[in-house]
Length: 316
Image 1 (cartoon, helix red, strand yellow):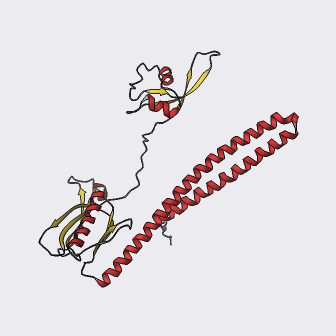
Image 2 (spheres, rainbow, N blue to C red; image 1 turned 60 degrees about the vertical axis):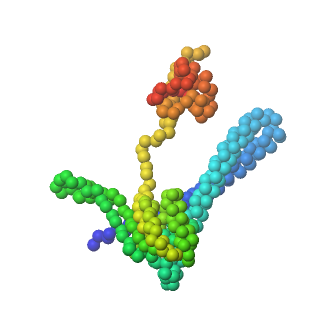
């Protein structure tokens, strides 16, 4: 009997951050040991040159070679140190968010036991920061999902999923924000408005639970309630996806050969790029370490202030 393939457990963001820390830490240690080794070799050749006058030139050449290797390893080590620190910061942020959200869920569980007349619908920031706003759903909660489905005939035998896709997913809660007094209820409403204006990702936990909601609209009906507010809030679910693209908007460097009639009729290599909208000779000169005058002269650009888009120019 054939065994069914077990799908690997998807890696969490926290595990991914831990893996990244290990990788950069390994590279950092490797470059550090390479740097120490190169420096020791350079010192050894320098010491030998002091006691071997005949071979001094040769030994100093080897010393300089190892000093270059030392500088290169030092630069890599410093770069890896920065990336390692960034990975640690990312892990700490993800871990802290996980802890904060866990604390929020614990608070909600304790709140539901006591009830406190505030209602069972909880709204809080998905990163776990800030407070929890409770709503008593007097007019109920509703969850809605809509899909775009073709109105044309489909190919016979073709899977229907190729002709439909989820268009939107949202929720609505209408009810009462309970406050100790009107000022307390107003402060909770203002907090919701602040989250809405900042477009923060929110978690909604009631009869259903989602953590990728944004507030799409909110209404406050003034019915002269003494301490409470009658509100209605609509949420829109926002999908998260990793987007990749094959077309890179950055310059694609490529090396081309250009013959130039100089003494000896030598062949010289240049780095050529294709200009895009917004490029200026000044920006290119800063990026590639050449003067505006040099780039204009080599590429026969008469007006340095005007570069045609899509023109191949040499920058090195």
